[in-house]
Length: 159
Image 1 (tube, rainbow, N blue to C red):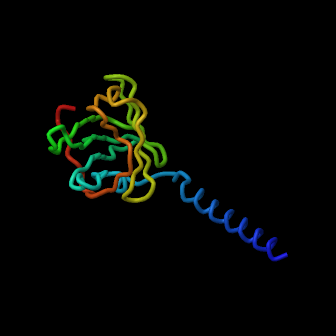
Image 2 (image 1 turned 30 degrees about the vertical axis):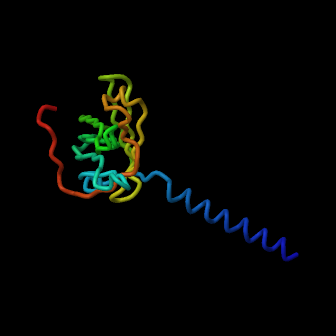
Image 3 (image 1 turned 180 degrees about the vertical axis):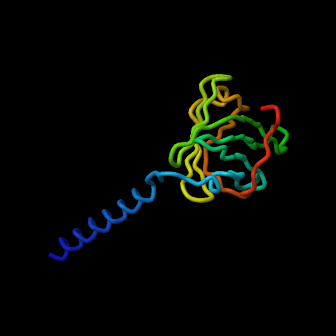
């Protein structure tokens, strides 16, 4: 009898935890321009703890964002020196709810999805190779980025 009660309690706790996790991961209906606008960084660890990829985002209204990606892939070269491959992209993304999509066909089919998971944190996923996105070898936008500046970001004037 004690085993049965334990099993029922265990299953109930698992269901409660699962429901809480599912609710926390549910998409939000919208995010504010203040939450969206700023500069976000994905910091590397270990030897590269002072290195970061950055994404600058500006809400321009009517479901549009201006985005710029400054990405790095740090590594140690054959001489034992620190080095990095880089990748940049700049353009417009569309946002619906808590998810923004940047898409480019300049080098191949590249789609970068930015999900605003909570204030100050974005999850980024890339669909397309580094070549498709015009990035250097092994450079990708994937990862968790944290906002380190809420100021209106500056963009290159050529785009």
